[in-house]
Amino acid sequence: MKSATAKDLRHKTAALLAEVRRGRRVVITYRGRQIAVLAPLDQNIEPEFKATGFGIWKGRRDIRSVNSWLNRMRSARYEF
Image 1 (cartoon, rainbow, N blue to C red):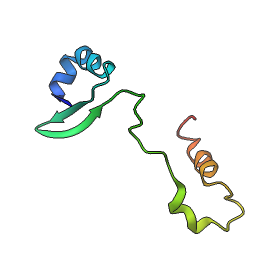
Image 2 (image 1 turned 135 degrees about the horizontal axis):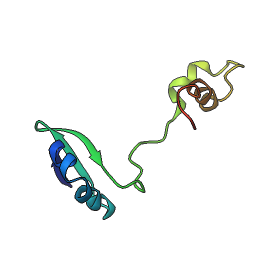
Image 3 (image 1 turned 90 degrees about the horizontal axis):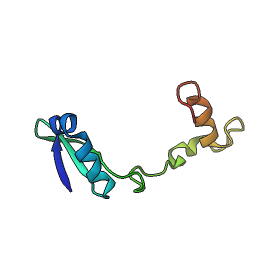
């Protein structure tokens, strides 16, 4: 895994994106601390949302599907 500073990201964006296109991950550091990872989109970086924490709402009739309820709540802020 390649590492680059925030300054490298500003000045060498094309070269870093070329690394990502080759399938390599690039860790971005800021003041010596890792803050982000650039990775190809075909890799599933973010785990799929699972509604296990919403089990307390299981018996509610107004929230039959937690995912659809969340999408309705977020629709004002985000487009899906």
